[in-house]
Image (cartoon, rainbow, N blue to C red; front, side):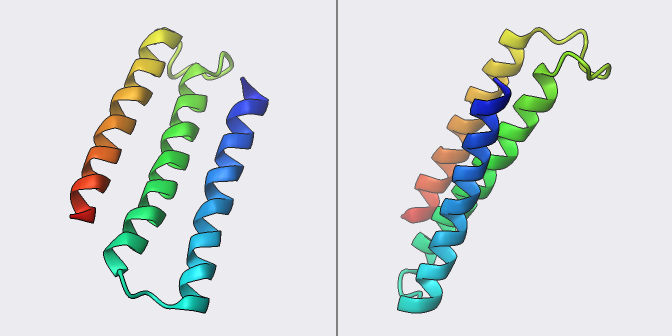
Length: 90
């Protein structure tokens, strides 16, 4: 789980930086599309880190939380995040 989650966070962060670089080079004509893409990357990375914190066995704060519940929270929050992003696109 650690490797896959770390790779996911790195990929999403790298993709967000790539979008910022593209906007700096080409321009930001559809600015709401740029914001949607970057905020989607940031939100996905934050939610993946939260999932990783919750399923970590060494973390005593979430010891009563089962991993299935943490994953369900992750999926639900991702759905809400991307619905808001799609609404922001127009």
